[in-house]
Image (cartoon, rainbow, N blue to C red; front, side, top):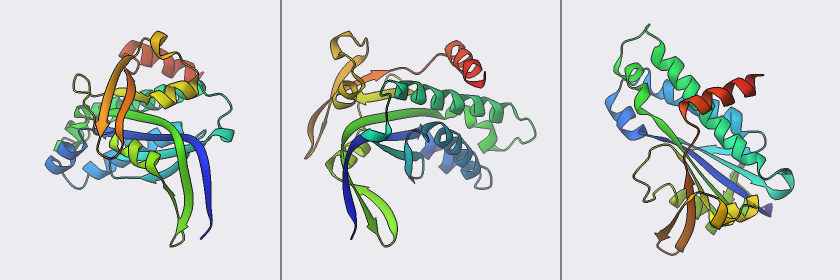
Length: 208
């Protein structure tokens, strides 16, 4: 079995409200809407990250350190993924051609992104690429956190913040500690994504 170990970024972009949306809307349109939203996020994350897997309501992406020459550029990548998500969400919600529950429930969805810097193992299992390791598990666990005052946000671990070269005490981000069995306490930092006005400006700048 061919394996390789890397230090790098592990990212999960997850759609908030997915379970309620899928279980209460029509099968014909619900999954298509989720797929379209995930695809637009993937297009912003890759490059510079590599899409590892689509996990139902989430996109899992990784990026070995040597492939990421400008660390702070990733913050713009995350913001652009959110902006693209919100732009498509608005477009889908404004489409009056269908009045089904799925199409009318699009505004109930949102996006959160978790980013961690750590070590991961790349391997082939049954002909399929896979990444493994404690930091991979941690990144997935971080989706289940204690952030309850917002649905759309970026959560960075302390390791990620250090890799970005940001001073935690001067970052202006909301600091918190999440605890997980077998993984212990994990210091994290949370910030909001751009507001509607900021997102529109970023969208225009990106298009230009």
